[in-house]
Length: 135
Ligand code: ADP
Ligand code: MG
Image 1 (cartoon, rainbow, N blue to C red):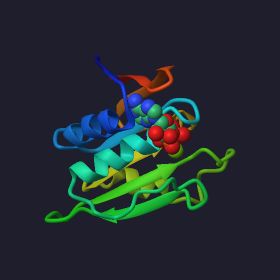
Image 2 (spheres, helix red, strand yellow):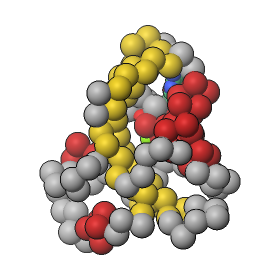
Image 3 (cartoon, helix red, strand yellow):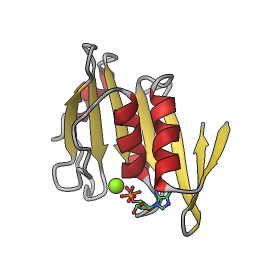
């Protein structure tokens, strides 16, 4: 288990950007609304060299970003609005392709995450303070 305390949006982005250089595969993000999950993904994508604007995919559910100088894709998934039926989303296909880097907001809604999934929990401590736990 690794824990980090950040004191601003910028610090969370910097941390995520650094983690992007060492974490590959599937990342399950949890934390209440406004915890900083999308902020984390923005920093993570920047760390991969992605210049696209990373917005919350709440209505689209899945966004795909090409990773520069790599054959891999970053998938940004947000399950906030999903109720029960995941079968239409094509998630399995995305998750089982080990060439994909997949970051999932509200990942606690998924029961079967691949082995080796990194779990990241973001907890709001105070106004701008967040406790970020990796396991
Ligand atoms: P989520 O995707 O979890 O709902 P967002 O990333 O969209 O959350 O929003 C997080 C909000 O909290 C942003 O407005 C951001 O500026 C603010 N914030 C304040 N402090 C931090 C911090 N330390 N880390 C991340 N976000 C922070
Ligand atoms: Mg979000």
